[in-house]
Image (cartoon, rainbow, N blue to C red; front, side, top):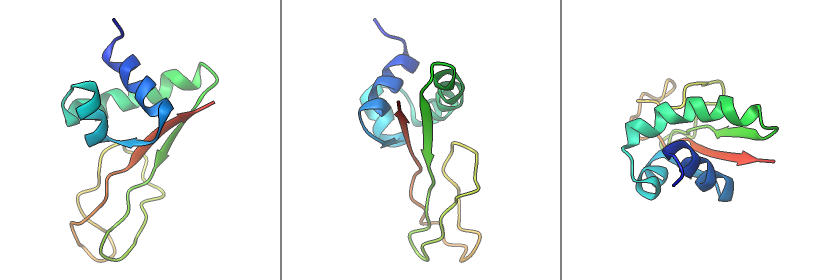
Length: 94
């Protein structure tokens, strides 16, 4: 039986997913997904694969959080201060 991290890796190799989708598909809590993502990002790079973090974006003004390195969802937009922010998506290629 695969571990939680292996299940998450298999899911995001198939297609890009956000933390809520991963949480539902892997059967773990959303906050737990964020903890696993940091470890997965480090471990897949050693196997010759590329971990991609597609940044979150503000749904009100369109600001994209390109420079953000944290795996979690930002709480609000720095430009317009709106709290309507999309979830970042994760994928593995290679």
